[in-house]
Length: 417
Ligand SMILES: [Zn+2]
Image 1 (spheres, helix red, strand yellow):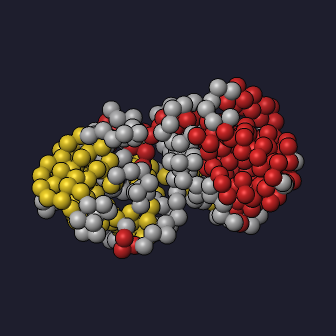
Image 2 (image 1 turned 180 degrees about the vertical axis):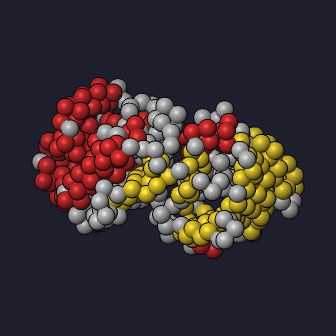
Image 3 (image 1 turned 120 degrees about the horizontal axis):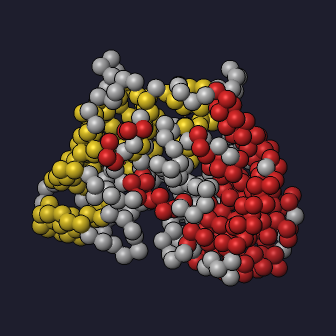
C-alpha cells in the first residue's frame, strides 16, 4: 500500500503534515479546477472527476499525482493516447504520465476525466468510523506537484446519515433535502479536504468559548476538558506574545475517531487542527496551533520557515506550561540536530532534511533567542506576521533592522552550518 506523506513526521511524537494551507492569490481563470461526483456505495467510494487544466509549457505529455491503490482507474480526454506509472526526479510521489497524440499548446485548456474507486475499509479507516481524504495520500488527481493549486466543487451522495462531514473552513458546504452535499472551494488550494466521522458532536467547554471540538459522542467530557485547557492556554499565550497583530479568535479542534497508532500524524488548516485524543499534550497541540501563523513559506523550498517556527512556538508554550517536557524535548532535539545538514539547504525532499527543517531550525531559533533576548525575539516573530515575511532572506533583513549586521551574519552562518 502506498504510504503517502506520513514520512514527514515519523521521528518524534510531535507530528504534523506540512503547514500546507497557502492563501491563493492565483487568478481563478488561470488555475486548475476539479469537479467531482463522489458516491458512497457501502464501503466503496466511487469517484468521477473532471480535471480542467490550462497547459503551461507546450508538451505532448502531462504528469498527474494519484494514489496507485485506487481501483478501476480510467482516464479519458481528447487526444489522450495512454497513461502509465512514471517516476519523477526528486519527488517520491506516485506519478502517472499521460501521453497525448499531439503537442498540447501553451494556454490551451483541456479537460480530463478520471474515474476510479477507493475501498474505504482497506484504505481509509472506515473500520474506525473515520474517513480522511486529503493531500497526504493523493486520493484526488492533481497536476504535476504537491503545491499546484486548484479550485474545486464536489457533489457527494450517499454519505451514511450518522457521519458528519468536515471540510476546509473557507469552503461552502450545502446539504439538500435528499442528503446530497455540495462543497465549493473558490479560493485556490493544493488539496481537496473531506473528513467524516461517525456519531460526532460539537462540544465547547462553556457556551461562550471560542474553541469548538468536533469529536465522537463517545469521547468522555473529562478528556475534552483536558485537551481544551491545553488548546485554550496555548492560544492565549501565543495570542498575547507574538500573535497580537493577528490573534486566533474562533478555533476548531477535530478529534478523529481513530488513534495516533493508525494515523501517525496530525495537521493544521488555518484555524482548525485535525488531531486525535492520544495527541493530548502541550507539545503536540501547541505545534499544530502555531501553524495558524507559520504556514506561508514555500513548504517545498524552505520548510524550516514553517516547521521550525511551529516547534519554536511549541518551546515557548512548553517552557510556560510543561517545563519538564520542554527540557526533555529540547535535549532530544539538540541531539538530533547535531548531525543534521544545514537548515538553509534543507528542502522538503533533500537528504536527511527532516531533522534539519523540523528540528535543527527550532534549536537555532532558540539559540538566536539567547543571543538577542526574548523580547527582541518576540518582536521578530511579530514582524514576521505583520510584514508577511515568508522566506529566509526577508527574515534575515528584518533581523538586521531589529539588531545589527553582525547578528544577521551570525544567524546566517548558523543556518549554513
Ligand atoms: Zn508542523
